[in-house]
Length: 380
Image 1 (cartoon, helix red, strand yellow):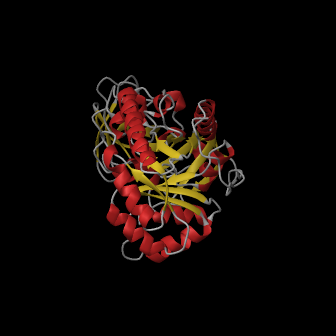
Image 2: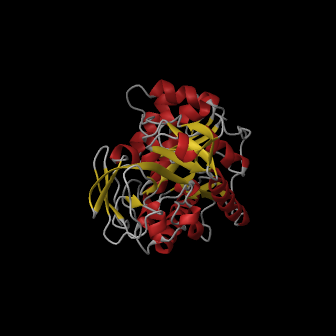
Image 3: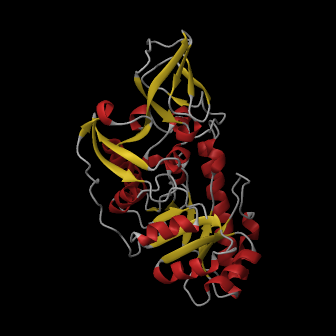
């Protein structure tokens, strides 16, 4: 079992979609709207859970992707031990709904207005936070007082965003232990796996960094129960290393970048934006009613355009404005008309979801429910 930590209490039973009456998608859904194919969503959740389980790795999926109670409940029903979140606000939102095993995978600093909130949350939930400095350890101990709080030391495995080098992890752990904090293990994020062709190498870097950091902590007398890592592009590679807790997020929906990277197929994409053609200025250009305030503005080097148009092969979503999505029709294999309805797969699904109030849940061509994006905008 790779030394995997045991799932804790705090699981929530899976609720059914909130039924708002079944309706045909194109007849009754205003555009732009985000649609979730519930069958694809559930297949994605089940597939990742089964692969992690077969490898003896605990799932702690990142909820910043979906920000919804219904998806989180499905993840726990599939065997996840708890949830990963990015912010204190996200943690509070999910705790309020009964999800009581949470990891804030971020170099947490209890600044203005956060100390009392953190202490209160640590009293009612099993709470872990990330640290990568002795200063953060001191600040956290002062913030939580006698409340139980677990910390994981963040290490840099090559993405160079946050985290200490693996050889320095024991120093941070020692500073935390001296202040009475419970050091549970180490974590990292193999973000360089988002570059084309880099997933396997990033997962190896991740495994090497976690192993090095864990050995330093163990030599210093710390019990290293958790070696946490993973991202959607690297997840299956991570299962072959020393990771015993996996934190992918995007896999539940997938997105255009994952398709471009080869992480998934279009048939595994569970979320898309339903849009309407509102203008056709020329034979070579059309405009949709979903701009950066719906799709997000991400365009990484791995992407072709600002999203995928699965129903319009050969076309490219070439530019975005706040409420306009410009489609280059050169090479398109279909003629468009004003009023046509199309689906767009966003490049980065996390950004798109955070811009929406609700997700329209679909089964086939029918809307079967609406899920509120409860953690939308919970950025502090």
